[in-house]
Length: 379
Image (cartoon, rainbow, N blue to C red; front, side):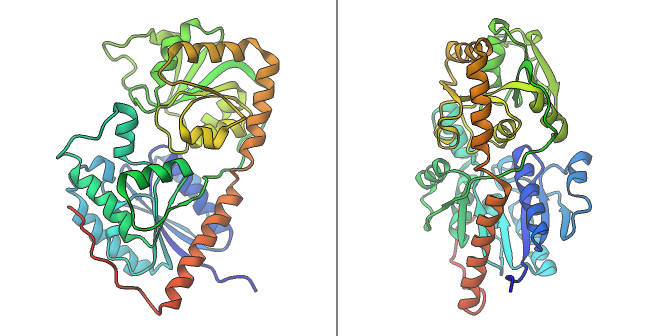
């Protein structure tokens, strides 16, 4: 007899990889016979994003106008968010609440709650600026991250490296679980073409796309960058933006089509807790040039060239080497594609289903919702 299906309330946002992660997992859960209510916070999904989940049996999309916690540093929307989420639970009666943020775990949930720690401002700030975010602007945010981790029955990180970072920064009372993100290959295979692809916003210091732009003129192959164009003409830039083909913000299907043709994918990020775009590029058969940071080493050791993301000469040298060495390039293309198979959607689905059932079983064993600890959460 197969285990009973679950009703899962899952929060999400439509910005970047968080949407890809949440919708991929939600579709897999629905395909396994479960029901998912996907609740978005922050900017509403674009039309192409809505089409990705339209018609999925068992998936309900609820779009709210609640602020994302990392855009609401002082917690002005905290109380309204708690009320809205509690009302959604009363209406939907989920078996499991899966929040892809932190402060949402502080709502008055009756179902068991798992927090998935995809990133956080404090770790981002340390990686990008070398110190902690300024107080008092981010004090409420940090307190709510800590409170959300403490309020949840379980918490998950997408890599062991980021789990360690969260534990160092916030000292949660329970041990986190590392569950690698997973995707299946998408898009039809295509012949590889002589260009290098990257993805990210130019002004995002974490993605560090500007490091590629600074060396683009000295690399034999053209560089294409997918991501929002705003800011590309910013005054004071120290590179020639005309040497880069700026593709703009692409629907996911169009980005994957570029990956299918790209020979090399470069990600010189100084901060990346997982990097779903790198996984998509590996699945598409790109050779990888990645920054030498703990999360990328954990995920892609032996299947990529690693460089110091703050060393422009190292980035230029690695890219030029791959352009000029066809045998090495093909070897790394095969290695990345083979390595990517360990991060399958089925593996991620199995891991989360196992976690959900453990949580639901523990709740049944205690005979109902436990008394939640009093957590200091700051509006």
